[in-house]
Length: 456
Image 1 (cartoon, rainbow, N blue to C red):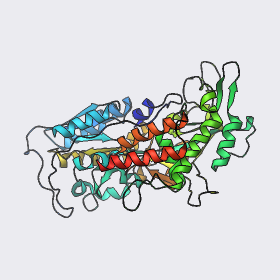
Image 2: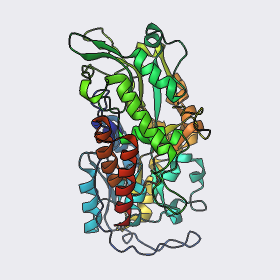
Image 3: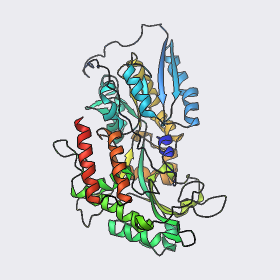
Image 4: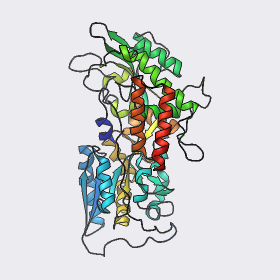
C-alpha cells in the first residue's frame, strides 16, 4: 500500500491518489467447492518429499521488509517444511489490475497475492476459502486480529490475512493555524472548514498562485479525489448502497458531500474562470519544512494517511495535531468522526495447489511478533491488535493514530466494482471543479453510470 499511496501523491506526496487504479478482473476459473470449516481440508499439497515452490507476490513492502522476510521468515519456514522453497516476487502497484487479471484468467501464478483494501469484492470469487486453515477453530490466533480482518473476507469467508491498517487522518500545523488567526483547532463541521479554507489559504498576487493552502485533501490540485469524497460521505453517516443493494448516490448525504468538495475548492482556488495556481512542489510532506530552502511546503492541514505526513523523527511534529474528520453534525445528525482505513492484505489464489502450505506461511508471517516487525519496516499500524507494541507505543504519533483507527475507523472494503466506481467518480468530479456540472448533476451522473456498471 505504501507504494500505491506514494505513487498517487503529487503535491502532497499525493496528487490523485490513490488509489484510483482502474481495471476489471477477468472471469475467474470455476472454483472448486471449499471444504466446510468443520471438516479436515482436502489434500492440496504435493506429495511428501517432492520439491515445491511457494510463490508470494508482494506490493506492500520496503527494502527492509524484503530483507527481513528473506533472512528470518523464509529460512524458518523452509526449515520447518523440507523440500519447500519460498519465492518472493516484488511487484508494483502500477498496472496491478492487468497483472492480477492475468493470474486469474490463466488460472496460474503466485500462491499468495498482495491485494488492496477494495479488492476482496473485486477478486473474491477467484480466491480460496481459507476458513478451514485460518478461521476460528482452525487457528486460535485469528481472534487477535482487529476490524481489518473484514478486508480479508469475501462472502463471509476468510481469503487471507490483513497486513496493516492505514487510515486517513487530518494532520494540522497548529503554528500555521494560529499565525493565520485560526485558534480553535481543526474544524469540526462544514461551515468551519470552508471558513478556514478562506482564512488560511494565501495567494501571491505576483504569480496568482497559492503560497499557503489551508487543506490538502489527497489530491491537492483538484481537491476532488474520489477517496476524499468517500471519507466526507461516510462522516455524514452515508451508505454506498441501499437496502436492496443498489447504489445510494441519490441521497442527501451524497449531494452534501459533493457540495462540500465544491465549496472547499472554490474557497481555496476561486471559481473555474479565475482559479489561482497550485502550491509549488517542495521536498517532503506538504505540511513539513523543505530542508533545502528552510521554508514551509505550504499546507496548513493534510487529509491523508501517515505515508503523506512527515517522518516521525521530524522536529515539525511539535506543531502537528492528528484528528479524525468530524462530518457536519449541525446539518446531519448521523454525522460521526471518521478515519477511512485502508487495510491491504495477502490473499490465497483459488488456483493454488498449495493452499495448506500458503496458510502455514501466513501463520508464520502473521504471528504476533512477525506482524509487528513487518509493519515496523513500513511505519504502519499492525492488523493484529496484540502486535501493536514496541515501535507503536514508543511513538506518540503512531499511538494516537492507532487509538483513532480503533475508535473511528471505517473500512474501505466492500465496494462493488471499485475500479469502475473510481473511474466514474473521477470523471464526474472532474466536471464538478470545472463547473461543467452542478453538485446535483454530478451525483445524478454517478448514480446512473454506477447503476449501469453494476448491472453489466
